[in-house]
Length: 186
Image 1 (cartoon, rainbow, N blue to C red):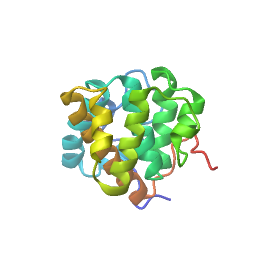
Image 2 (cartoon, helix red, strand yellow):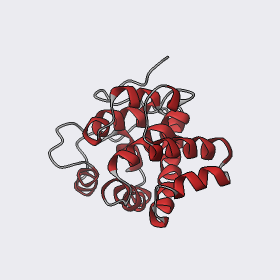
Image 3 (cartoon, helix red, strand yellow):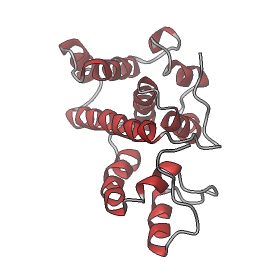
Image 4 (cartoon, rainbow, N blue to C red):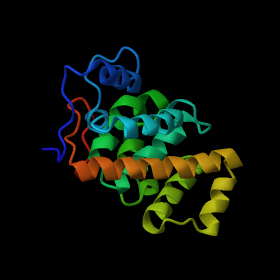
């Protein structure tokens, strides 16, 4: 049971319009519970929309790289809600194999799946950020071998954003979406 109940339909017209804007075109299920809780504070939701939508739809990182970062950040934060949403909605479409996706939930993802050098660098960097909120010179150098400065900045924002989203979903005790991928238990 969530700590704050998501809004339920029928939504006031302004909220309905805002919620539909947050969802991809043609989606047949209700807007995400996370979005429906955020719209209990419409001003905050509106401010969050710009960054979230920008990272998902207009980023400089390749889509698969973005989803690797999101999967690892949410897995390290034990945010089954957001991990499951992205696993179901994006992982296959960007080219993540089931083995790679599951590996993002393991203690050492590189030991459980084959990763390209850039992807291994992203996973190591996410782990360092999670553990210390810093990047070692080696981790930064590894990232610099594969990404341009603008992408490096985006990576840091993306990792921080999904840490924030994980705090929000975990703090609210959001129930997993019924269509989301289940978080691996072992």
